[in-house]
Image: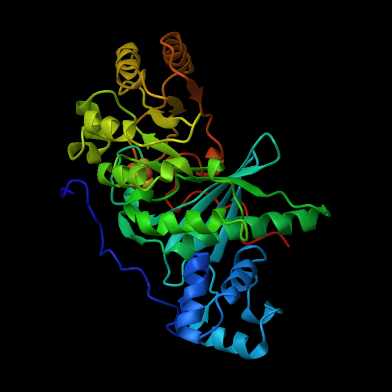
Length: 384
Ligand code: SF4
């Protein structure tokens, strides 16, 4: 990558190797890795891996001691080398529309955010972060203002889901509801470029979709990319397109504009990006999503619609139009409602499958492009 793209502000940090006692976090291992680790490090039978995996990911136990079908001797040995450490919750902000922003902190002090968004069908979508900060300096994005801190470890990605699920259970219990709502959908669209942290994201997907764990359906998971072409090619090569959805943050129809608002485009141009996306094998009936943040007088003209149709009209895709959510870190404006309506109408006239994404949680700075570790906090901590 060029230096324009990797504009790292502040020192980038390596992934932590273990907890304060040097123990590896067990929540960051796939089921096979966990079984192999228990066998290799502790000379346990491989089936122990299945038991421990279920305790960690289906029941989300906080302590090895809770693993009651594992002998006391084996629990002590697991505890000596393995950690169940979790993220800590700094605050939870609640928006008027029911969106919650979870402000979380890693053991080494990195602040990250996840956003829990209610769906119409009683399910919930969780938008997870894959990095602390981001190095891709997209001009409309508040996270870019943080610079890049480090990639998140697998367990730090996975635990965002479990923190959200814990929150839902506490809310249900406070309301006297027997059945808590569940995180049903996952989008990797929080802080960071997910495909720049490919291995950890890949493993997190494997863990979260496992039927002995959280069992989130792969078809309900979407990984987003700003256009990291080699990683998109790897995504395709490794068959991830058959497991989860792919979203591309496109946001412009000319290289001139995209270079300006998404510096990654100075390395991989629109044509190269779309050619790579086109080669990703997808599951039958699945479509690539193109995210298009609509910026007044930048990418919202009738000519933009015409070019958009030329660029992606023949692809199996849908376009999510996201009217810009203003924030202090970017100099852009949201187009007028008339302009947004016209953009949508022209897209549809040209046969593009187009959806408008209304901002959710913009009163708590939780909407698309607003995650920057600030914004009002409605209440600190979890509901009691
Ligand atoms: S839009 Fe995504 S890739 Fe671009 S700077 Fe923000 S977090 Fe990074």
